[in-house]
Image 1 (tube, rainbow, N blue to C red):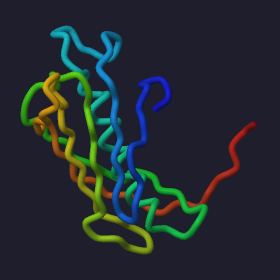
Image 2 (tube, rainbow, N blue to C red):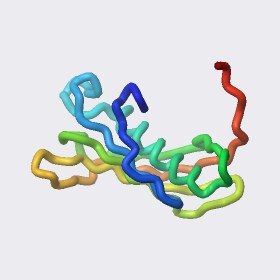
Image 3 (tube, helix red, strand yellow):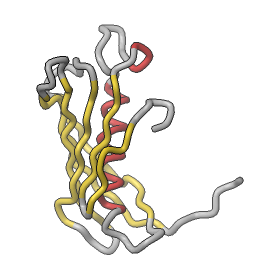
Image 4 (spheres, one colour):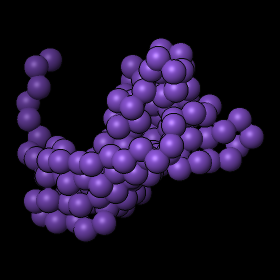
Length: 127
């Protein structure tokens, strides 16, 4: 997320919003946000939303997701808003919508994701 320059806008119980400003190095050959960038934002928004409902220190991993692109990723920023549709002890079902912020401030829905997250025990990571 750091390499994308993504910014965590909100984390609340069962919700998360992440924004990413447009940059040329985040585009595909048509000059639009790359699908991988928008997918990453949506996946992380779902993951943080699910994690917000776990006990402190809990983590999640993506089990599966489906992302549908509704229109091109054109705008000055992408904003992914994730929410938990059905929380669970093991699996949480989430959705995220990715909007493109236009230069005039309007937001246009560009993609939507349905995702399943699994609660995972924190793992020791090499320092």
